[in-house]
Length: 272
Image (tube, rainbow, N blue to C red; front, side):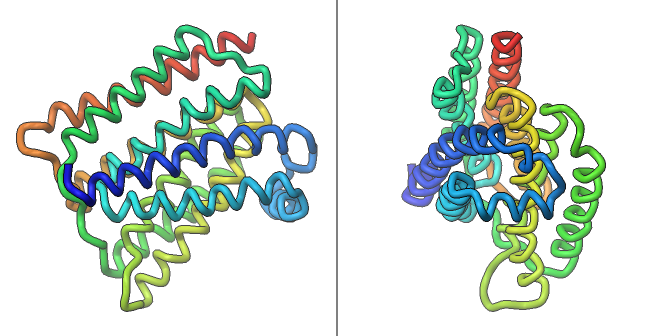
């Protein structure tokens, strides 16, 4: 394993631990205050005045820096799959909220972990930074569409909201690939899209956490934020795969996604 791959994996796993623990604190905070379920503007004002949410934001910021390192050093499919480890961390930590992990849940954790191992073994080199106005314009348009859909779907169920949150975090991860020096208008637009996608996803995820067990809200988010950047990275951003390991990469993505679905269903069954 080369140095970049090792450093990227270490950064991704560290980010996953921070994201997983922060999700449980976030769930506890939003469930304790009805103001957290209001619109995006009121939510931001409420969160700024809530010390628990500020602690969550701080953890997410540190985690995001680590995640960005993983995105720069790893193919997007591996960087995002490493973040999928936040789901097992969340599932274990959510016992603090009396959300007990079942046998099926443990099988889900094993599947996510096994999928990540396959992705790590089969990973090739990461694609280059994307430059050009087309990429930045695409990010801005995607952000606008997600904002409109998110506002319209703000009263939807946890799975829908979690999926939309995952798309937001996917957009943030993709936008990181457009950030570089020296600055240009396209690079500035990509850089601004990173926090914009992140704030929108944070709000949607908070709404999902208010309506379902932590793992139920988190599983579809992880699935969306793993698959979308992975496919975009392989198809358009130049992410590489080791020779002869294409099937292993596909199997790893399927296994990690199946694990999140299994864990989601296990948590839904235990909450009935």
